[in-house]
Length: 398
Ligand SMILES: Cc1ncc(COP(=O)(O)O)c(C=O)c1O
Image (cartoon, rainbow, N blue to C red; front, side, top):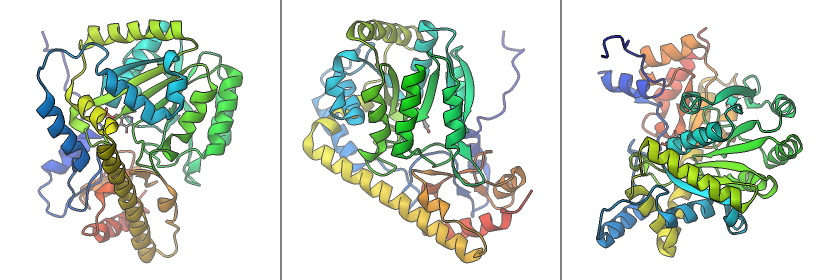
């Protein structure tokens, strides 16, 4: 039956973790997979999340099914976290389903788009997160890329991006990273979000926002300012939410897809399709992570404690950026590394040539994915000098 299947190459990001684990060198450093790490290299469960878990388990009287749309309190609270007061205004026009993490939300959105409008094309940023294209494209929806990043200036290629959007037909879909662009770390400024909204509105292009890092760029409000601007102005918007990073719920697979429709009747119809897509793929989402996130958001004390923990995560990542930029500048005063501190979130593109990226992994035992993205949270006081030494040695490899 399966004898004709060839062994596939490893996933570009998960393969880095496997290579890191297999390396016996004690000096090895993992800057690969995008998980937050503390000073000891651990990916902690936030204390507020741990306490919410305790409360959820203590109150749980049954493990019967949650239903295809998942936990209604979670759905309402997570959308309110993203949209703020707008969530109330848009409630009747919003169709939300709890999903299997942010990946589940992205895939559910692609399935929904494909069902509603099989000819539509989703435009993703160039570059984008390595799993966007496989995850969305496997639904059958067509994908194209739009210019996003200018490697020479390490900034958004904004004129080219706008030009691309200007050329799109009505009904095209534009995937935007809500904050902490993965892999570049370079986000749109608010004025740029406004300019994008103008063009989307004029051209009838539908925004699709991937919100995987709310609260990890600047703060829980600033990180969604662009999203809220779009949601307030455009008739239709898709929003894929992940609770993996900001709640530390990675393995609980917690997320949501919210679709803002033109009117309440369309939103109700979308809900039935979301439920059917889920039912046909995996039937129902898992309970635990959503129940925990709902409790964190619903209990004032837990919510405050969790917010403080997101603030601490941001402070640590900003400090690490400054630390690494300083150590690199100390070693190579002829080069500018200030861009590292201007970026948002966990990621940075090093701009290394493929030979440099290979040398970093093979010779220096510093593991990064093939696009040369580093996870800043993998840097620590203990390893920053080794990271800086290794980077400087491979900077000019061609
Ligand atoms: C840009 C982006 N979107 C979505 C996700 C999905 O996250 P998850 O499915 O783990 O919630 C990730 C995770 O790395 C991401 O980086």
